Image 1 (cartoon, helix red, strand yellow):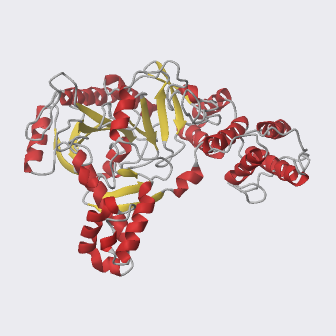
Image 2 (image 1 turned 180 degrees about the vertical axis):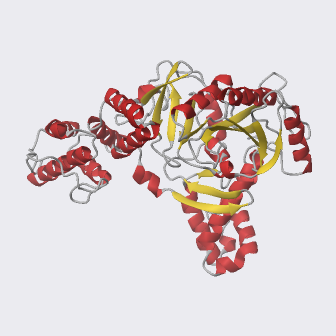
Length: 536
């Protein structure tokens, strides 16, 4: 290795260690050990650090940057480049990512230390102080991919249902609903380790490349999981590496078992908001089409965010005689959502289970809802969300709110991917399942839209509508784009095509959510919904 390269490596390794010290990932006394760990990760035998560590790390440096203004990504990219140039790793995205995770895993406290610090803070200063610390650690060690998250395209669109949040997610590819269903139903491979990306066995795992006979699996050396107990079972809390909202976290069962919605699910959600009352928690539905993208592992999602659904107006209230301490209401929301409010955790649990159990067996010819197939296959389930609020709606209060979005996964000849799933006319924008996050009003749209909408915008502003069908980037959007141009041609001509398309995408998302609603907002749908709530 050339001397110049050695100097770059030494400087980078030292600045990375100083970054880790400032962020309290390691102690100042660990710096020499950490420096050598970084060298070992890139298979280097030297050189010495360019600046002797005779003084404590400078605690006045900006937390997000090293002493020379370089970000964590800059430092890790330099190490990865060094490893590539010296043949330490192969030139593939997974190998480069694995090296970065390996380095940061070495500079992150061990899981037992993280758990000890979390619970110590929780006992001394409360659960919010504990999660604040844990989230900062997961950002500082690069597990929460802040730079990747920042590249996502986000905006809000005013709609009939309030301001919906729209995200074009540039971090993950679009998934086919049928592939999601197959993955959830597939027999578990006892040879696969970890069994899925949500298993607690991912903590510290080195990952596998595309050429592995066991299949590709991302590196997770810098993952840390705080152990929890829910319902007398072991669970774990981690933050999502590709967060969709503030402090997006995941609570997952230690057992690799399929998603399920039942009494235990609601009880666990209520227990979670008692443990972490400043967060909401919810679960994807447990059936294909209406479930999320991972049905094979029992887990919840939560975080510090208020969604549009939580601000929805009340359409009507109803009483449940068996639960006098529970107020019940139907929300004015595109999906069919019931909200239960009470100060009693026991009443919240019993009332929610009552609604779920009745919905499981409910059929409505007028609404097209069929509870089960002729072979007994269930079609009805719910997407549940739980949070605690105060009288003014502030998080962490004494009132339990349980949101139950009624779901049905029936299919038809006209809608083979699902009657209550995004209809084919909107697949050019959204084809994937409507999961927990989208139920609440935050769209997660595929990365392809970034390039496709930019090209649609260009052609609209150029007045080249005839070119839409022939262009592979715009062909799927052609009919929609022409309809938009016909309605909003003046804005397009004024050079506002980008803004127009963002607004129109938001409107499409509102229609997608309407498709997912089992009781439509028309006379027949409202009558059917009233019939269900009256039965409660």
